[in-house]
Length: 358
Image (cartoon, rainbow, N blue to C red):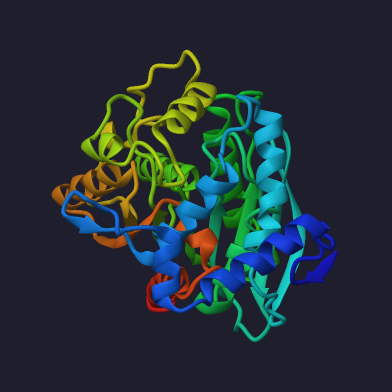
């Protein structure tokens, strides 16, 4: 049924208190925030942004971790509970509608976000959430996706793909392909312009969008008009320098990356391009790419190397680095102005490319 904003329920009291405290802390004067965050962090010749450092320090003090007790179930529950503290305002101009996608492996659930005054047929971004292929959902990304739909003025279909380790590789790849093909096949029903259906996502979702774009470029079926890859993972086969530079203390840790990869890849050949798109064959026919990285992210180098790979192949690619931020910054847009600024840059990139692609 159509719904406005996020109707997933009132946040629990502890999450509401945490949200209020976070907002108050980030509104403090810069000198006070600096005292709370500690001395400026400098790594690789760069300085971590104050808001990013304060967020990492608060996370350290509260014992935050993406992986809880090595348990997928507990880790998923923690992410779902934590989303309330990060959630931004509801955008009343965004209409949300839950839809079902039939696949060979059963049904997938998705949510279609539509700006109310958007002219149809409209551009559509098929979006895949982050979470290391193990955690995360369209519910936990409701606020982020609503923000992007509002500021980019595009429809967004946010997809719940199957998660590892219950469904290891290549289950998520199969689901993302099915979701994209569903969007193309049902474009008229969705009020969508078939020539402007893009794919995108952040972290693991960015990885899946990159894989989908490669597979589609080699196939005979529909191809995305664009790919939007926000701090994506692109290489399961080796460690890049940023993995060691930013291994600990910056929200996404080396230990967590290893755990997520083991849950998803299991015993598969990690050189398979569907696991490591950095090793895939690409040429100029691949959809135009907008790739963002964070300066203090263990995944930074593999995302930037993927952009260079596309560039050398003759593809159209834009690489944008948020030099002072950490992995996952899109989800923090409501926490502090610096994160919102970065999220707005991403929304503008989507808007500019999808409204001028005819």
